Image (tube, rainbow, N blue to C red; front, side, top):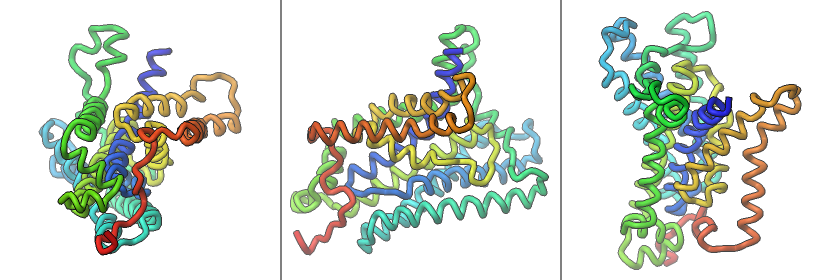
Length: 329
């Protein structure tokens, strides 16, 4: 039961890890992208659309499906959809200097509306009696376990029984942490977020770094939406079923203190907190709802502690959320 609980926590936490890692990359450039929930939603529905078209082109027969294409097409569609949303945000905030908070909320609203529209359109095409669309054939390729997992008992179940996007999320977080701390690109990106005027004076193209960071961060977050549909929901798309995972990913950024490596542990902690109510017997509906707020409560506690300690390395980028006008340099 303990192993099952841990595996379930990891499964619940992986979309949050993708979203938080993408948001950390964006925030390190000085941009607060509150559009992450909408971007994850668009990444999910874009992958669903790509998968739906490929399954239909194969006659809905898994024997005719190429495993590589069955995985690659949803992946590339999710990335493209998420990057386009990130590009819209970048044009509005970097080029046009629009308010980042308002723009992010607008991107979230747009993303959810677009996802629901495309989802409803696919449901109408399939003439499904249920308000959902099932892509279980594609999902089976995403959730394929490592061949030796079943031979290793509980160790195999705990460490090697997850979908490949789970391992990919951890790799991306570790690589992101290394790039931010150990490379010149990471140093330049952090300098843009801390003091863009100084970075500009040193010859760093502030606008380029912010564009690239936002688009890369959006692409990573979009993969979180796809992982949720293909691994957690087993390929079943239902409008508005994504819940508040996008907002939890943003909360995880604060919990992780803007460190992708800490976000790995934090995402699994959030997943455990979200799933704890299912493993405690005798809880009423009201108590279960209280348990669902635990990730946000923990984030508030961490935020209070960090603010009280006032350690610079645990603070957000100094220029986070502020537009940069080169003429004022």
